[in-house]
Image (cartoon, rainbow, N blue to C red; front, side, top):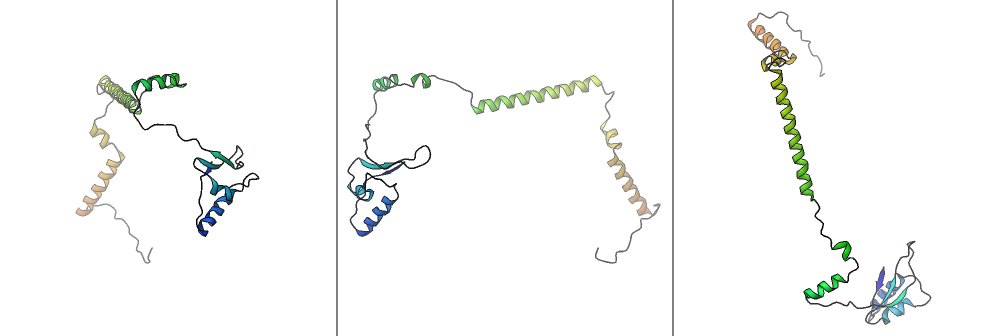
Length: 179
């Protein structure tokens, strides 16, 4: 929607500005846009809108209705009267207490906490029911791991090598270049 209120031309520069403003409106067979812009009175305007296909409609000279409001506090009785006359009171006068995002997120967190506690309870029950039959001690688990065996082997080689008791020596190739 394009609305143009009155423009006044007092100088040559103002007349050029009015001519440019008039050229921004669609051509009209009813109005000479450049002249009518300067003749608009209080509450009058030139209006054009886009139709459903996005094409500007013809220019129309309109009288604008002033707002009918007051700058005062509305009384309680008057407010209730206006509300009761409203066409949308049935739709919007119902009090609805929906769950907030905070409440929904807290409910999900509580569910996760409960699930975690249930999982811990199941794990504790499994440990108690096995009574150590299938459980390995921490020492056995660490001692039987391949990482532990590798560490022990390398430390033993290092110590034996320092004492001069080592078996085979590692061969090192000489590097003759940069790589």
